[in-house]
Image 1 (cartoon, rainbow, N blue to C red):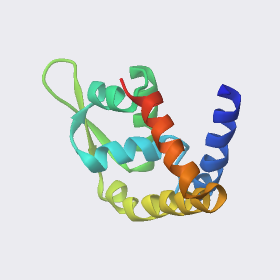
Image 2: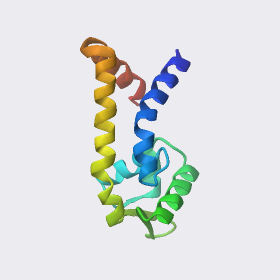
Image 3: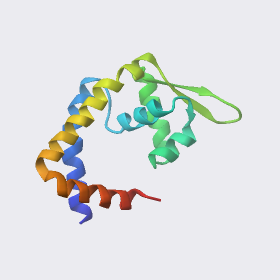
Image 4: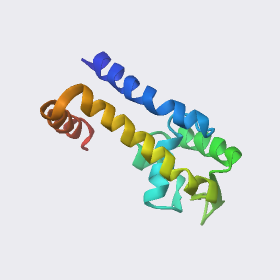
Amino acid sequence: MAYALLQGMKSTRGAISPVLAERGLHPGQDLMLSALWREDGITQAELAARLGIEAPTVSRALQRSERAGTCAGKRAAGRSRRVYLTEEGQALRRPVEQAWRNADRRLRRRIGPDDLAALRRILGRLTSS
């Protein structure tokens, strides 16, 4: 079952990845940007918690995003760093979210409304804390 779930995720990710690559983004950077589109200026620790990933992974993604010009990290109190979107990062919102909507439409065509509702319930249970 876990393998099938992973394959389904890869299929959906495959529909989004070309749009990301065209804009110089690596898989997963869209998720980091999405968290910042919801709330800009959060700490790296908050970003890691919201994405459910480890701090070193956020650090690597942030370094990559800083090199690409989409985000900037700034020292805050103590050792923490706050992450801010640049204009380039803000400009990616429309094309990235459109890619997600396109992937959603593709998924809806493939599984139908009843299966989609069931999938939402199941994924909700899997992702709830």
